[in-house]
Length: 234
Image (cartoon, rainbow, N blue to C red; front, side, top):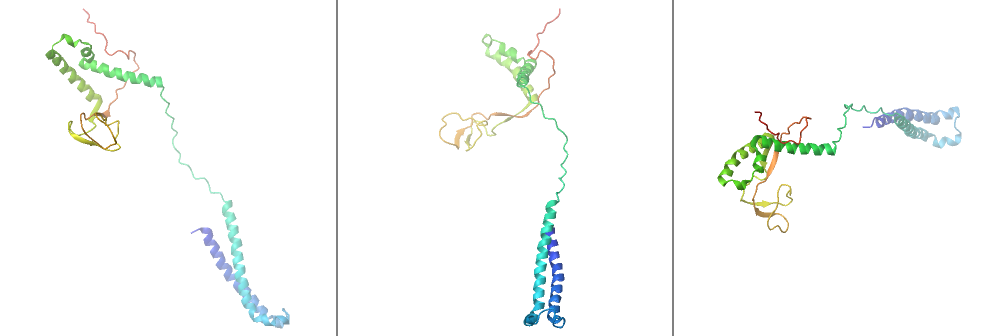
């Protein structure tokens, strides 16, 4: 409950206990003592029995007025009191992160791409394999050369990335593409017409990166060198 309302009610009851007895007593004195003291004229004799009741009503009215005045004074006093501002929680000063220069970001992305190629070349001779003219070799020779390249590339990918499939269903199984599907996760091919859901055959489950472990780079030069030349000293 509002504290000012409680105080106002207490003031009203105290005023009743004070004003009603005082004004009732004044009316009683005017009714029964004034004839002897000749306070009131004789023309008021008819109304003398009503004077105590009139005094009680006057006391009630005085108590109501007194309460209204006190309530107004309390309200003005509360409006004049300005509560102290709440103490703000002190937060440690944080420096805004500087925005990355677009040119520096592009250089970093290019360096990441070249780094991956350099690792694939170092571990599996991938660039050497791509640079070869396969028309000069038989199929069995190509198959024998692909096996170590495949194994090395697989180890490198597992070192820096955790691969997972987009859809868990087996390839060749019939699936339903629901309404509101994510186009970045599901690519529709074939005779696509109308609105989803669609019925189709899963031709490829898709790949997604579930974890990436970024390598750290030094500021050393030669970032565009995928693999250095090898010179044997005789």
